[in-house]
Structures are given as structure tokens and as C-alpha cells.
Amino acid sequence: MNPTLNIPNRRQLFIGFFSIGLSGFGGVLPLAHRMLVQQRRWLSEEEFTELLGLGQILPGPNIVNMSIAIGARFHGVAGAWLAVAGLMLAPLVIVLGMAVLYDHYRNLPDVQGTLHGLASAAAGLLLAMVLRMGEKIERHPLALLMAMLTFIAVGILRWPLLPVLLLLGPVSIWLARRRQRQGGEAC
Image (cartoon, rainbow, N blue to C red; front, side, top):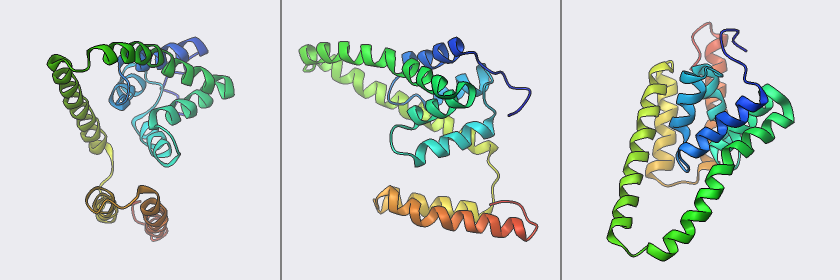
């Protein structure tokens, strides 16, 4: 762990993830990145990227997987429970309340317009986070090739993510290790 980073206590861990859950739900990765890396400095950029990769491979929502890993990293099983509870408490209450309201007002044009606007804002936040993270990642032709193959397979050809990851993941790891053994930079 990087000594220049902060280590949250259990209360800070719960409140930090509660603030992420309260700030938005469904698309909170940009908010989580800002809070965890930039504001509270609990993780470095590299650690966030590694945990995001882990969260994407595991089943379930990325942010929940990340909250478990981050909570466990700082405070073991209790930390994992606190981080997930903090993350999920506010959205649970809000979604249950909104479900009641939506059921009553769903046919109003203003409600439909608001939902479309929220979707656009979420897409913009996600794109900003991807661009910010992309600036920090080392670029190598083989790594770019693997990213393009993954994008084409999943995004364009609509192949299922799991088989694509099961095929391209080991190939990427093998290429990176091969390059490291040859004395070059990692892919």
C-alpha cells in the first residue's frame, strides 16, 4: 500500500461509501473514482484501476465488488460489510420511495424528459472517467490491439462478455508476461 495515501477508519469507510451511494446510483464509478482517488486519497490511480478490473471480472455490479474489496483491504470482513452497507443503504431507501412515485406519475412528459436527461448526464460522467483513466494507462500496441479486439467482439459483434474474457484475458496475460521476460515494458 502506498504510504502517501490515507487509511480510513470504519466510520469513514461507511460514510465514504454512503456518500457514493447517496450521490448517485446505477452509474457511480466516476463519483467513486473522484472520492476514492482524488478527494480522500484512499487509493492511487493504479490501485483504483486494478480494483475496477477485478470488479468487472467478478459477478455482480462493479461498484459493489469494489466496495467489498476496498472495505476488506482496510478492515477485513467487517470493513467489507460496512462499505457495502454504506453503499447500498441510501439507494435502497431512495429507489423504494421513487418506485412508489414513479408508479403514480410515470406517464407525465416531464418525468420522461427528466429520465432521458439523467441518462445523458450519466453517459457523460462515464466517458469523462474513462478518458481520465486512459491518460494514466501505459499504451502499447499489443495492449491496444487486445482492447480493440474486446471492443469489437463485445460492442460490435455482441458476443457474450464471459467467453470473450475467458479467451482474450489469458492471451493478454501471456503476451504481457512474454514481453516482460524479453526485457520490454508490460503490455
